[in-house]
Amino acid sequence: MKNRVSLQVKCPNCRRSLMDEEVKLHGAPSIKLNIMTPEDRGTIHLCSVYECFDHVSDIPLENDTVVEFACPKCNKELLIQEECQLCDAPMVSFVLQTGGRVSFCSRNGCSNHYVAFEDLSTELSKFYDEFGH
Ligand SMILES: [Zn+2]
Ligand SMILES: [Zn+2]
Image 1 (cartoon, helix red, strand yellow):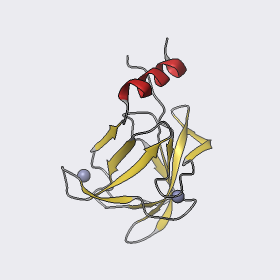
Image 2 (cartoon, helix red, strand yellow):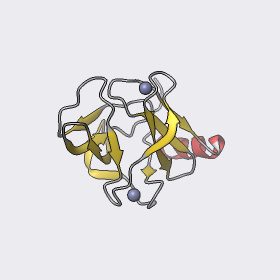
Image 3 (cartoon, helix red, strand yellow):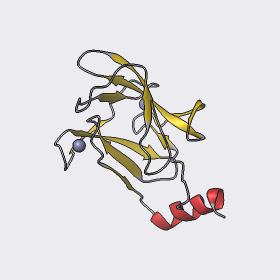
Image 4 (tube, helix red, strand yellow):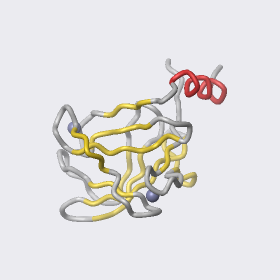
């Protein structure tokens, strides 16, 4: 069984934390974002555990819908100029508290996501300090 790692992310624009300590998913603080679909707008909480992209949203999300994500603090959209290699939808990107970034596809139901650490060894040793056994 792999160690479960909770990613701490912040807005690439205003640099404020996107973590919501009050709403936990899988026992870890969730990532809170504003979302917009063609029909509706609402908020979403994403699981922050690495490689788990469970989420809870307060509006219905149809499969295959491209969702717009925005920072709840500064309202700036988090979509970047990069397309998903699986489905061509725009990618969404956050900055990790410890450096590096995490990106995922804005299309609901697409499983494409990846994490790019600027310094993998620092990041991993921090994880093991916090979560290691
Ligand atoms: Zn922001
Ligand atoms: Zn995709």
